Amino acid sequence: MIKDYQVEITENRLVSGITWLLKFKNREIASSAKPAHFVMVRPTPEHQYDPMMRRAFAIADVVDDEIWIYYDVYGRGTKSLTEKKVGDKINVLAPLGRNLFPEDDFGFYLLVGGGIGFAGLSLLIKKLKQEGRPFKAIYGVRRKEQLSMLDWIKENNLEDDVLIYTEDGSYGEKGLVTRDIGQILEDKPNPVIFTCGPKGMMKAVAKVASQLNVPCYGSLESKMACGFGICIGCVVKDTEKDTYVRVCYEGPVFDMSKIEL
Ligand SMILES: Cc1cc2nc3c(=O)[nH]c(=O)nc-3n(C[C@H](O)[C@H](O)[C@H](O)COP(=O)(O)OP(=O)(O)OC[C@H]3O[C@@H](n4cnc5c(N)ncnc54)[C@H](O)[C@@H]3O)c2cc1C
Ligand code: FES
Image (cartoon, rainbow, N blue to C red; front, top):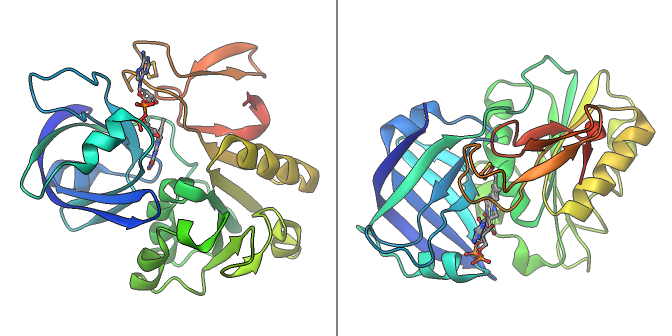
């Protein structure tokens, strides 16, 4: 059930480039969080309303009762989040998102994350690893400094499971996340692709998936004001039903072949 929680910050620090790691403790959110769930964080203290809207962030990890969020600093909301200190209280609406990654028994899972979008897949990576399912993850960025979850990958012993691609070749493989998808999936039975990241990247991943005739599900990020279906601010076009759907309520995960980005 969605609830408005007041939680205490346990960590908030710059990890690399423009990316910060925010942690807070809450047993209920921790026990209900599933891959693709997200939270809406109020960037202002109680009774202050500028900036007013909450900001949406993926639940990137859950460690005991602690929720981890990786956030890129762009505008006023995320800037004011960087000013929060350990011990400060923030308001968090959680858990949000109703349509999550499909739980079907696929033969092989390929997770493709771009930039901060990797934080939308990391909880699923841990789950697949724990369940012993066959998978590989691809983490792509422009250059090495943007690999803000590299430490997380190392801390969780996932170096062999996550293939890293940089556009300038400064770390891992040189090239785009789509470069080797065909090769990775070549001999895999009943594969599926899950993706999260910038629009252009998700479109490119969906195109490769369609060429390979592999199902592809994306966890979408669109501008959100409410996060739970009321404001209609986050819609994308469902091309199959020829209607608009709310990313926060009918998503955030959609079959990429049925959505117009
Ligand atoms: C499901 C989901 C998961 C996400 N996960 C992550 C993540 O893990 N890490 C990450 O870095 N980013 C994530 N994002 C993107 C993140 O929410 C935006 O980068 C962040 O909101 C930008 O806030 P800002 O204060 O920097 O920018 P600003 O430009 O100040 O604010 C933009 C945001 O403010 C809100 N907003 C402000 N005014 C209005 C208005 N009038 N009407 C509607 N909305 C308004 C919207 O949420 C909009 O996205 C996610 C987005 C979604 C939807
Ligand atoms: S953010 Fe308000 S309906 Fe989706």
